Image (tube, rainbow, N blue to C red; front, side, top):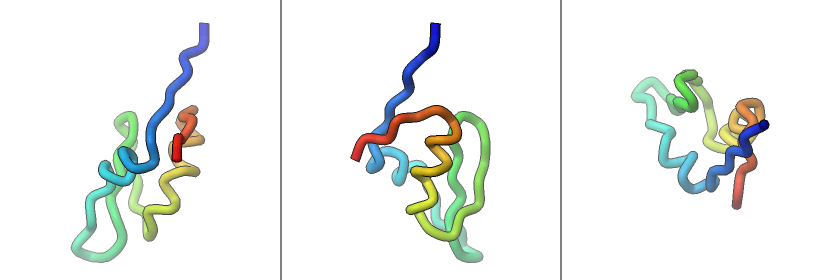
Amino acid sequence: MDTIKTASFEYLIGLAKEDPEGGYTFTLDGSVYHIGDVLEISAIAGKHGYIVIY
């Protein structure tokens, strides 16, 4: 059986921590990403199998 994972975009943005050197550090399901813009979060969540609710 497949699990359906959902998350609100607002919640996911809350997981992004501002990096003092610029951009953000975003952690999802134990994977850490260094991103330049929070708009990248939707694509990352999609790769992890999440349906993002706006």
